[in-house]
Length: 448
Image (cartoon, rainbow, N blue to C red):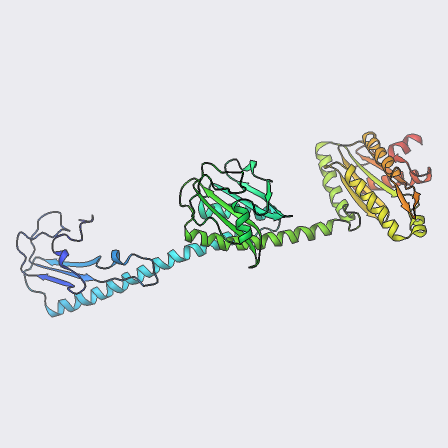
C-alpha cells in the first residue's frame, strides 16, 4: 500500500525519539500492519523511528520532519530479532538519517538559490542594454518574471516633479508621461523618504499612488521601491501592483530591492551614455547635428528615398561675408550669430528633416519628401527669416544674410556625393549672383 495513513495508526503511535523501536515477536493474528492492503501471515515485526531534523538555519518545518520517517521490517518467521540483525538495522537507520538530512539540506539550498538565480537573470537582462528606453523595457520584463504583477511603472524625479517614464498594464498609456509634484502621492513619499511603501502590501482603494487626486481601482497589492543612487539620493521609483492580495511578500520585495538598485545605476549610466552620444552627434555651438551626423543621416534618408521612390533635397547654406563679421565685430559676436542661425534652423525644420552645421559658417539641410520646387519655397522662407533677424553691436543694427544651394534626388543625381557636389555648385552660383538668395541645381541647368 503506497498511499498515506495516519501517523497515529496502530503501533506507530507509540514511537518517539526516547522510544525509537518496537519489536513484536510473535505477531498475533489480529495485529494490523497498516501498509498492507490484505491480511497476510506475519511472524516477526519491527518498527524503528529515524530522527531527521532540519538545520536551525533552514525554514523547513521541524515538526513535519521530526518523527516522520519510520523503518518497518516484518517476516513470516516468528523468531526474535538477533543482535546481528539489530546492528544491521541500526546502521541502516543511521545511513537513512544522514541521507535524508543531506536531502533536506540540498532542498533548502535550492530554495535559497532560487531568488539568487532570479536576481542574476534580471540583472543579466539589464546589463544587456545601454539606452534609457532599453533599461525601462528590461526592468518591466524582469519585474514581471519575478512577480507576475499586473501593473508596473517607473517614475523619474525631474525638475521638482516625478514623471511616469513608462507604464505597463491596464490603461498604462493613460499614465505614461504624467507629472506630479515631487512629494505627491505614495510614489513621491517613497522617493522623498528613500524607503519602500506601503508598510501594508495590500492596496486600499483610498491609497493615493501617484498623486492625492489619482486612485487605482481593481488592484489589491502594491509595492513602491525608491530607485536609489547610492545611499543618499533617490532618482525615482519603481511601482508594482497586482489584482491579487499579498503578491509582494518580504522575500519578493528583497529581490526587487536588489533589482531596483541596479535599475537606478543603469538609468544613470544610460543617461550618461545618451548624453555622450548626443554630444558626439551635436555641434556644441549651435545645438544642431554635426558634420558626422549629417553624413550618417544622408545615407539613411537617401536609402529610404530610393526604396520608396520618394524625393529628397539636400541644401547647403553659407552666411554671407561672415569673415568680415568676425574681423569687424569679433569672434564672440560671430558665435552669437551662428547660435541664432542654428536656433532658427531648429525652429523651422520639420521633425522628418535634419538641420546640421556643416562646418564653419556653413549649414546643411536634408528635406525628406521634398522635390526642388517644394524645397525652394521652404528655404526661401528660412532665408527671409534670417534676413529679418535683428542683430546689434554697440547699439548699431547689423543685417545678416545667407545664400543657399539645392540639389534634389532623383532629378539632379542619385548618389550622395553627386548631390552634395551639385548643391555646392548651386551655392557657388547663389554667391556669385549677389548672395542672399536660393539657387537650385535645376535652375542652373535650365538657365544654361
